Length: 307
Image 1 (cartoon, rainbow, N blue to C red):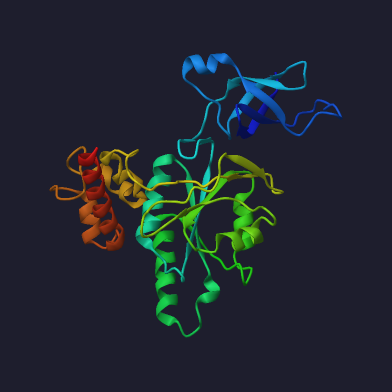
Image 2: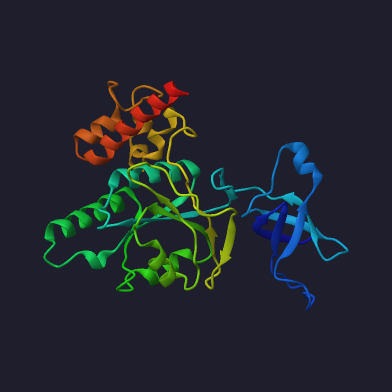
């Protein structure tokens, strides 16, 4: 039975792009097969998602049936999409100013979801040569996140800066875009993927909530062999899906030290023998990152009380 990728889900139908094989494809076969899911999925409480690799069968009317969902690497609830490997985070260096606390909040959610982040600082053209303070702040931020182990690309749609690098990173992966409102994502995306008109999550810094911009999820195929999810991404950056005990593991640099903490389940806040606190004191963990960890921890405790 043929395998394929669900590239769109709409009104109870799943649009499956068949995997390329050596078999001769009929000339009249469409690029995607409109399929229904088998009733067994509903009985099991399962649902095929955009991004799923599936086994399907063709029916007499030229449509198809999704028969089996193959194992997923990742699964997001909001948006409902499977097998996203990479989240491209767009954050402007100016207008609005770079917000590291919002970037860290995104990184926590992305680490928890098991995605690989790609950080892009946008609007580099707005930094004048005489803006030495701002330029140094951006360079420090870039160095900070690279030292942690993240890839950071400096970009400008106006200067066509960094776009080739982003395009290269999209090859052969399923990616999604997300970021703060007003970061110039539309102009940058049109440079990276001309004519894409993609939706992304745009999070208001003041509210921490996103605008609802699309009714369904769809994968857009790229020339380089990858796909980009046309989705608003993380529509809300609250911590209700995350256990407070999981927060530390979402700070990548903490993981280098946490296994050596004296107490199992160490919160890295006050315990004696905490190796994360030792690393902070020795300058091996950035103060800004640790302060954000403390702030998120308190937010999570407050949300837990509220619910």
